[in-house]
Amino acid sequence: MKIYGIKNCDTMKKARLWLDTQGLSVEFIDYKKDGLSPELLAEFVQELGWQALINKRGTTYRKLDEQVKDTMDEASAINVMLENPSIIKRPLLVKDGEYLLGFKAEIYQEFI
Image (tube, rainbow, N blue to C red; front, side, top):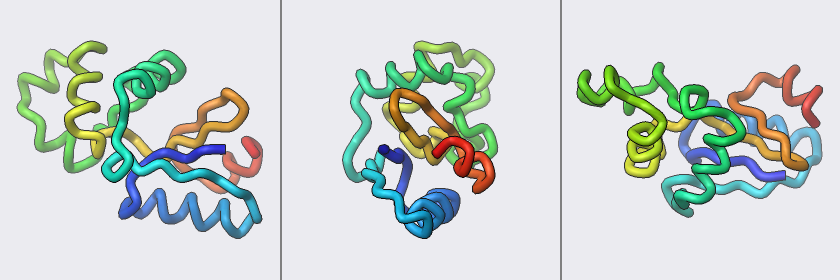
């Protein structure tokens, strides 16, 4: 399993703690530290859709220019996510080719 996100995110911390308490070994990939390749992002967009990946409740999204938000499509969203990985909803857990976005313990329990 792999989990993608940003180390200092509170939701990431909760997810990683939950996974640790379950005794699960998960590889953590930090978008800010490890980077995010266009190929990996394309995979995420294909599996989940760009709309699901954009965290509209976060500070990064709120700071975007209104015109950027109003005219966002897949291509522009990909560019925004590559330039500002903090805008990507997290965590993103990947297991056996299946993708789970966000964290809720009961959903993780079913997913694992």
